[in-house]
Amino acid sequence: MRNFLKLLVVLGVFALGTVGVSKAEDSSDPVIIPLHNWSSQLVMSYAVGQMFESMGNNVEYISTDSQAVYESIRLGDVSLELEVWEGAFGNSFRAALEKGGIHDAGDHDAYTREDWWYPLWTKEACPGLPDWEALNACAAIFSTPETGDKGRFLGGPVDWLKHDAERVEGLGLDFVVVNAGSASALWAELEAAEKTNRPTVIFNWTPNFVEAVWAGEFVEFPAWEEGCDTDPAVGYNPDTTYDCGNPPNGYLKKAAWDGMPEKWPNAYKTLTQINFTNEQIAEMAKLVDVEGHDPEDAATEWLAANEDVWKPWTM
Ligand code: TMO
Image (cartoon, rainbow, N blue to C red; front, side, top):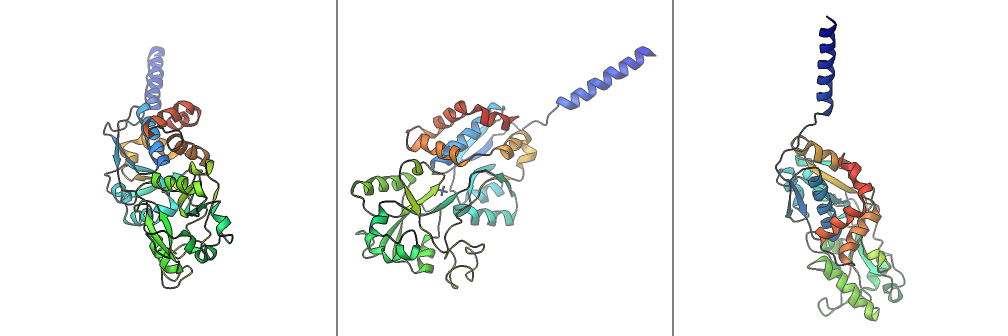
């Protein structure tokens, strides 16, 4: 009898132990991570991919359009997104959320701003800045052969923000929107303008490496209001959308395909715990844009130097 009881206890402990250590397994299918066309997103995506690999997951990267990616996640063709910037992608993200299949996987601590921005020397020629009406009164100093007597606004690649032209129209700005082919064309413009302190206004954002290299300010447009992007009645001009600035304290979110928690429970748990700060994101961009590393190597370097930050997210 005593032996039988002992056996029961041993079996019970064994069973509890098995339950205690058994963990749901992640699928061996690769987690599909999208890559876009700005440095912090590339470095962060490779860093998270390498975190997943350290947990035994398989990972595949695909280059995608940064607006269309929300539709791809919703359909399960892409597993997640690590940098949902409110200003640039809030509209596409909200539209995909409404259709279903994608969800909000939590905020980074980082807050973001993306908007028209000028290096500080520009203010010497246009002292009323950062006010947008002062900018408009100075439009001629931003003219180029390409834009005639109107000012040039050098926007980002077209997939980041498709609405600068609507803002120009809604606010009656004497500007022409010219889209840069790549992020590096924006930084080349700053370098070129700096040589002669030529005034220039470009698309820029924070966190970014730029703040460590060039002092500058965002243009203050009529304040962002919820619905400014969808309801003409909201904003400065009652007949147009996008007649306001981008949110000055925008979110930076993670997003995931609804099937991710079931297919890769461990990687998903890590995704929900991942949380980067402004400083960490600016540093990731700097590794590429200032120090000249390839994004994948920058990610490996960042992980090696910051194990105390990310290891707990993988447990
Ligand atoms: C999405 N971006 C950081 C380029 O503004």
